[in-house]
Amino acid sequence: MAVIELDHVTKSYKSRGRRTLANDDVSLHVDEGEVFGLFGHNGAGKTTIVNQLLGLLKPDSGSIVIDGQDIVKNRNLGRYLCSVQPQSKTPLGELTPRSVTRVMGQLRGISPEEVDRRTTELFEKLDITQWADVQGTKLSGGVLRLTGFCMAAVAPGRAVILDEPTNDVDPVRRRYLWSAIRDLTKDGTAVVVVTHSIREAENTVDTMAVLNEGKVLKQGNARQIRGEAAGNRMKLEAVAKATEDRFEKPGWGEGLKISDGELTLTFERELASEALKWAAEQRDRGLLAEYSLTEITLEDMYIELVGSRGAVEGAQR
Image (tube, rainbow, N blue to C red):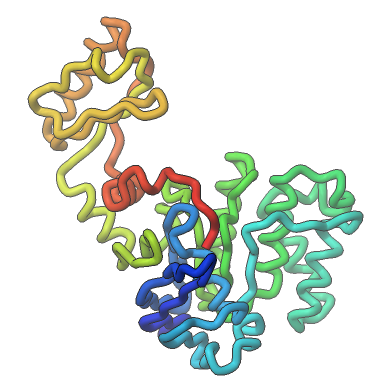
């Protein structure tokens, strides 16, 4: 059963006499108990979708339904049916993570006893109990980010929207966070993860959509899409100690590129031994440092779809 349904949603902005499409005929469905990944670089239109789900913006055309309720006709329902972790950091001031999480739970209508139980459970899951009663002004950006997640998760609505939830979070607690995100779906809650960190999210999301310039380029079952992207291919990743013109692409390689000091070479899976041999030779020549063979990922698929435009930092739409 679909919890979130966007059908043919279009939203534009007018600035300096020009109209820009932030969302261009977007249709997305998120089922109960599902983690949905909304992927795209800055300016792709992700935040505009979030703001329409919450009723903060009204689409120019199209329909938005959450748990059977028409959000376009009654925009206040969006904030009632969805709990959200915004992209910005949570400004606690002198309040503590425990106190703000409790307040949020009580505002969303659960009992004080249940609020305390859920707060303790979340803090332990994310390993931030030691900071639970520390004033916000003394906390790191990562702990503030995790507190924002707890505020959204302590009493989730029919849907939880997480906008860049792992920003500023250390690698260890990122793993705890992705596990906690999956836990949210156990009672049928739908979770929307909005991010450009596809590599982190791909092992958690069930379905996904890739946005670019307001349009949906690809969507569907994440596992199937990853399989389609990979086909029979793998890739060699290595730290490059020389520029791309120093390398000669082997005849069996599909593509060789160097970006930010990292070499990537794709090839057919049955040629893995050839790839390892080639990498060892390049290391012996002093052209490569450490290297590894990995599977083709959703991030690779994303880069193929949007190209270098995905790396461009733009204004949030």
